Length: 282
Length: 268
Image (tube, rainbow over all chains, first blue to last red):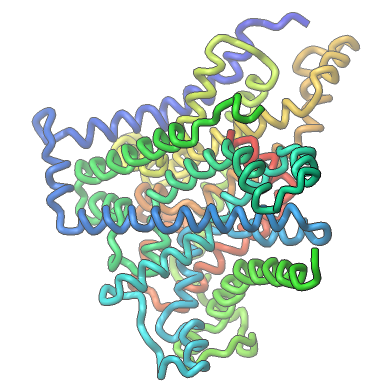
């Protein structure tokens, strides 16, 4: 059957139009809005953002979270992925359980850990029964920023490791079994096999998992609000505050542009650092 | 594997399963215990005092039911839009080679390198002008921007998995392109498309930031919970969190067979 030349264009036209309207246009507008000082081009919004009391803290907190959470998630997901590879019985069930958090919203994940970590919560009950504390103890306020930080880390690792796991397991499945068998013949240890075969061949999957997770990690917001309210400033939380409470769309847009710039920079760094060399795979 | 190592391995798997499940169980206890359970000290880990009364009370709070309904509407619309727009694009990517194909792929992939929800900020202004602000429809539009690229990539891999020859055979027997698609390809692709649709639903159901920025009175459940977070008592928060989680767990169960096909491919 002859293929009309216009047919594929007709098929993609709706999504192109949609993404233009709801991705490209707002993207451009966010940038314009952030440079709009009332009378033409100005850096006033950025100056106000950078001068804000919470700004350095928000920046530091967000980066600290990304730096701690992402390696933990990738490490944990790798361990889980290798465990699944060895599993013969019950693989389906375990896989489902491990991927449940994929469907859990960040807000709900924050509330889950709030139930455990609040003053009279389950963690304190446990510590009390072991005789480590004498009664309800608070961790999630502005006096305990480090405990609050680790609470957010726990909730984020709990919630978002599943997505890394799925991407890595999909990658592991693509690795030919023969490679491992050949390595066995030459007497390679499991550690050598992991380092010389699994890890290099997982590079493309690792790359996409890292990019996706890093972009999402810089957007961290609802988990933090659920656990600590405003006690732990983060970049996207500040954007939300400037937009909703202060009704200052310009400064909110400046925060948005900052998040986008950081995300893009992270993506470029991962693409360069983990360059997938076609020859290295052969 | 040697016996001690096998034992270690099984323990590891079970610990990791508990790591996922125990927190969900605990918020369930928190949600069903009501006001008294929250302040009880020390807490018991057995569900002796749990009842659905606390959850029912939560749903009776003014605004909660409406918010849940808004979430449902926004998520259903997101599901509908992202499949209606994304599936044709996926089919085009799978079956045709055309000029601009790589540019289109790039556009789709680009959306993943951007924090899309944050683009809801400038949309507020436009949505107020055109009357979409504070409506589930408005929320669903930005959620579709989140889910559409995903839907296009997933359906494209689904269609690629269905041999082109099936369609060509139908053409030989006199079907038009549309008939061949409807009678041969669609039935084969339908379960996968349904899984992608459910996933679009979950993306919208769970999204917090855009929904919070784009609504005031007609909030979705996540936006409602975020807005009342600081002033609502703990047991309400736990009930809200639990109600958010339950459908997601069921959805993940429904699409579990397709998770890899979806994420493995869409991550390339």
